[in-house]
Amino acid sequence: MKKKRILLVDDESDITISLNMALVDYGFEVDSYNDPLAALSNFKPSYYDLVILDIKMPEMNGLELYRELEKIHSQIKVCFITAAGEKYYEPLTEESEEYCKIHKDMFLQKPFSNKKLVEKIKKRIDL
Image 1 (cartoon, rainbow, N blue to C red):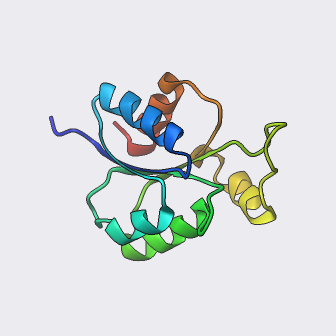
Image 2: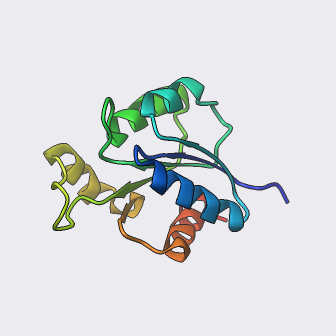
């Protein structure tokens, strides 16, 4: 069976490293980026089964990146990860909060276990 491919974008390198290792251990192929613009420029349409995006990133936030990726591949499946709402983090922007209410199944609140992330991934890509 072909491994499922995931694109992971988070501006914090420690998060991308740990998530990348965990996802590979669970049998996924993972391309990870800490720079959303680099991820956008290297994006391959119809290549990834799922894109995991952090919401808060410099240069381009996760929702902006999602919109740009969607222009390239309209059937893209996404899961957003966010620390917003935690007491040490900034709240979601109005736009992100509204999007989260509409598409709550697409969001995963940090911190989360690797098992919880894999469950969310499987649900999003219908394994």
